[in-house]
Amino acid sequence: MRIGILGGGLSGLGLQRFLKHESEVLEKQERVGGLCRTFYKDGFCYDIGGHILFSKDDRITAFTRDILGENINNCRRNNKILYKGRYVKYPFENGLGMLDKEDIFECLLGYLNNGHSDPCNFEEWILHAFGDGISEKYLIPYNRKIWKAPLKEMGMEWVERIPKPPLEDVIKSAVGIETEGYTHQLFFDYPSYGGIEALVKAIIEKDAEITTGYEVKKISRKGRGYIVSDGTTEKEYDRIVLTIPIKEAIQCIADVPENVLRAAAALRHNSVRIVLVGVNNESLLDKTAVYIPDPSVAAHRICYMGSFSRSNVPAGKSSLVAEISTYKGHEFHEMSDASLMEIVASDLDRLGVIRKNEITAADITNIEYGYIVYDLKCTANLDKVKGYLSSMGIEMLGRFGEFDYINMDEVIRRSMSMAKRLNGIE
Image (cartoon, rainbow, N blue to C red):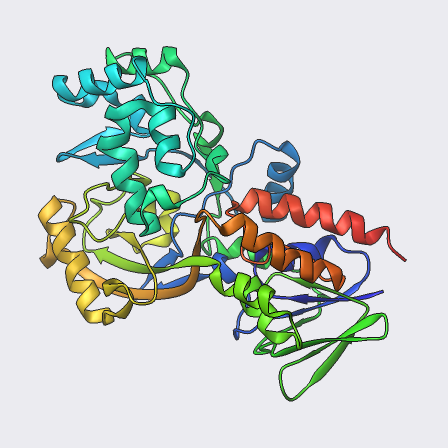
């Protein structure tokens, strides 16, 4: 059986590695990697945000460590939340003891005396899970920055990604006893050299059939198989797997019912603009990431690339990447790179993270598909699109192929699972 894999990100390349059937990856860009690409500027190396390798599934950890071999750096998380000018331990509920006493009281009271009823949307879920204090001081303003949407208009399909802390931990934190949250990601791996793209390169086997610069424009059935075309060259497969955005894939198929097209068009996503800032000192090496709920600051998160691996920065220097989510029509989406860079640099200077005169390198990478926005109609619309594609026998895989907000470890796990199923098909 010959399988066409549409999209050369982590999910498509992972699937190809695990398949026993003949397969070909078709990638629109001139290089593979998707969201796991790494970029270089003036000796600085940076990823599309803070990519780290961790998993509750020992099989995934064993796999990534095996293929990276000696090219692996073992790290301990040192994330902070910049709140009222101070660096509070991450997650917020584990850093309550670092707040002003009035803030501590309001957070603890809200958590212990939580009268919020069962939730019907994401904002109500936050309040129901964490109470007024923690929600209003951190979780609600921070999530508004990421999603660029009213949280009352978002669903709860993905909230299992946000663990609810044990009562004991919240009380300990409030009285100043050291606690750790999200312990499954307290320690993580990262490539020693080559950024997160080193993982992608390690996944690709020497004889892998990969075609880059191939933009899929048409998908059609031919007997029991499929024809894929870029408008010039046709390729024929027995099965196809979509890892490209499902919203784009549906446009490549002729005679799709109008209600399915409307459902696909209604699926919402945010883009992300990644701003590299390199400085002429080593001041940006003491943290892994900083979360910024302040709505007056453009970035929702900054990641210190040298803390993942010193090879990401030149000797004597350090860097961060600022992540800014946008959507078409938003002011940050339409803003020029130069204007956005000025805003980010000014924000960082105002916050005391860096001084503008320390900057020696700057770069911006714009990513169209960054975050899935789970609005209240997302599940119903997605079911229509997936149902139609399934009726055509088309497989879907990956964050935007399935339209599901999943981490790298889950992408690899699903690639393994799909390969196992397809390997059993003659």
